[in-house]
Length: 314
Image (tube, rainbow, N blue to C red; front, side, top):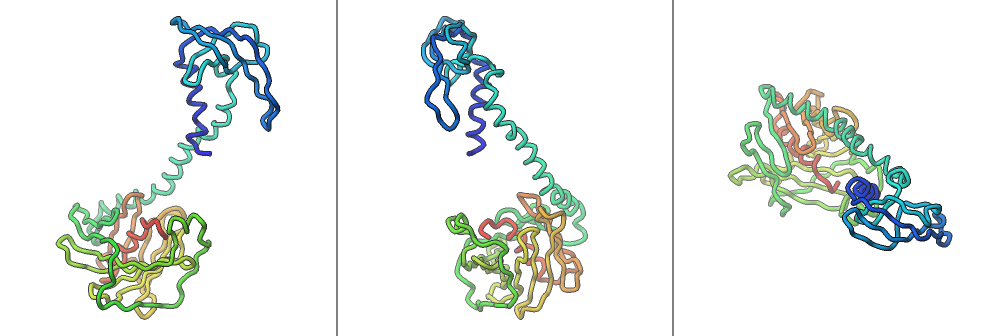
């Protein structure tokens, strides 16, 4: 049952008891219906007249059996006349009480998940002198001053000189693909190529993305001709982590989670364990700082990883 459905009656009743027109109801009779799983429903009928002179007849809600043959105050709402106010109609509010905590839980979860990333992003933007600062959002990468750096294009054909790069050691997924995943096309066996292009249209690199039903996804960073530069493998979805290999399969670096299990912020290290880049994930964007001392491929490796954190089909 959705949250909206659970909140429907509490909202309607609150509106009725607070804003509904006042009326006096004359209760003719109250009768119990047949026994069901929830008991025997009480139905009361009668007539009513509002303070403005309107009148009506039919079922009156919020009554007890002893109200038959009496006149009771009521309020006219979207679903009809209700008597007894909040006191007698407490059940829908009782069942919806847990939902009142949902906004606070969501706020707490977002604060825990995104708070560290936003703080880290702010510090990276405030001190750009230590390296190159880029911002990734959607399918675009920008410089810290807002100037465009590159765009990740739509899926297309492989570059002309492409040769598949394979290396042993790809990790198996922790959980099998669900029926929902299959229907949504998530974790499917597929390979796609997307060009990373500069503002004037020249291709800076090509990203070969490989998804699999039973294995963790991986990306291959290719130069414009199709020659492989690095293999980027996800080793864990939560907390998120990656390993980077050269085309021959030798380790050249890793990306490890920082900021807690639910954070998507990452520290990228080279093969010696020296920090090459930092990726601060704020929810809607990633702020990247690539250290001045990082080997050349790590700028584009960090961009590819940042794009991967927004991917919804892995």
